[in-house]
Image 1: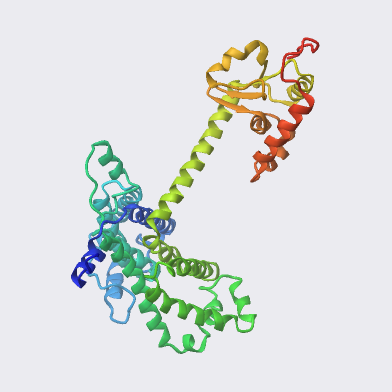
Image 2 (image 1 turned 90 degrees about the horizontal axis):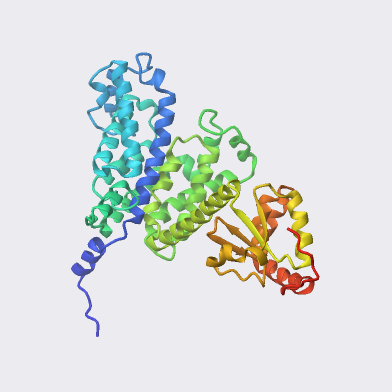
Length: 439
């Protein structure tokens, strides 16, 4: 009979149970991509925002950030931009910011890179608080929390270096993920209570009002207000989701549905409103909620696709080097006629050989020449029958329109049946001296 765990033991398991590092590594990468995209937009606006022509001086920016009326600006009384007002210093800071984001993205010296990203991000927000958004604040929070978790334990150069040196990876505990999950849940929870106290959200007109703001809404967003009840439904649905997310996201059964609904919600926000990096930052916060098992399965499929794509590139390169060789039955009249037509329209790099005369060239691949024609690529890959025909289409430009159809699901099984039927009906697979060989 299993021993029932005490509340303290259950709490210990909840916080300190070993966790898969993959969601943390992926979260670091997604945050790095969002930060990099934001950094590029800042670089495009570097002059005049961060030079002498800036509409806000460093002193004014500091006063604005510390003003109690500026509720959305964090109260952090420091900025690297306060060291010097020289443009060269600002450019140097941007160079450092860019390098630290890239280092975080690839997971090189992850802890140090994360600290630098956090310091630079806060400094940029303090220097130009007028362009600061809620999405920027969330990225700042994420960078802060990443300081306390082993973000480089997976999908990083640090992890690759530890593997090469046979070093142990830092342990990943469940509280590392709970820390990031709790941050996003708190964002939704606090946002709901902030909105529910305003008249426009309670009346259902908040989204409609936002869609009509010329500098905040997309050009087509105002048309949505012409749809009866659409604004009200969107407003109340948003409120309901922001309340439901922090309550029900902890249910394994409901989590996929909430993440899917949230994805649709934030894509809708991105398509209708100019909210800066808000939607991207919020969706980045979904990554720690993803199942490690599902992520591993997704990576396995990605690796398989990458291998198939890499194989295609390699095979195409072999075609250019003249290492595609088609072996066919020269004693078969149908085979000779088909090969004769294919030779006339094929790229000149393909070689055509009667297997009766050259069967030993590819014997190490164990081909069954008596059963099918073969395409041999670089003496490493042997493709029989329909698979050979399908691949050979890449070397027959006039037949390229057929390529999408022969790669449809189920096309290979059907093609194999048709190939066997044709070969049995039209082509003898045994040598026939009456047939003159032609190659």
